[in-house]
Image: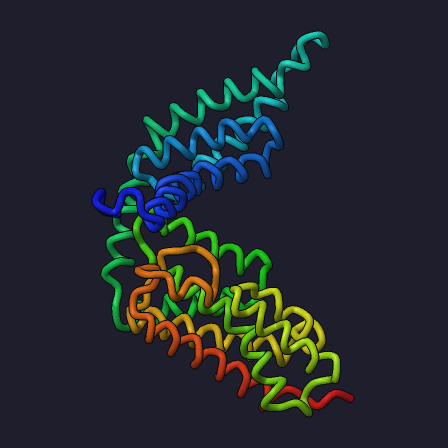
Length: 300
């Protein structure tokens, strides 16, 4: 944001989000990958490796690499370093983090950082310049991933990748991910109104809550419906989300914030091509609702 906006609310929010929160994305990603591998001794090496990745312009790809390097290094050292019992307490809080940080940092600086930065630069250039068929396919994939397990690992992989790309200035995937993630509960909420006979009384009553959750980009609002009839509901959700994601990227919609659903759409400059975003969301929601209505059986 330009310096002449200093002191405004928008500038303050930009400092909080773009300057502070986004700066933490890569270190946090690396730290928690390392934590999942090596427990507490991996946190500091992972976050420091992630910060080095950010400083080396290796972005989230470098952060992922740093997390795995730090985690497995700390785990290897924990297994192979043997100390006298009176020094064993120093191992998880000093010795392992210090050694793992040194090894991870040197590998990031001298081995991993530069080539990963080159790969990320090529990926960023491709994503920023994509159009036509490539945008369509990427939107289909990202949107479909958001609906496939509704908050599970596939959903989180798509979301984390799109959110991390925001820190590299690539904001189109986030649009496909958010719109694709809003579509399942919104589509089911619409289906309960268009095809009430296909749903139980409890599901019809849950439709209102699903609409609110979908508007807030909480894909998990679709889980109760999918759990009751997964073979028919999940393909319907994937179809609608894929349409929403594909339309978003084909129409050039971009999104600069990682969450918020409908509530972020009115924020100035948060969304590029707002009419396209609304169209993509409406189309995906309608596809989900119609598909559910066509293939879902009446409750027994």
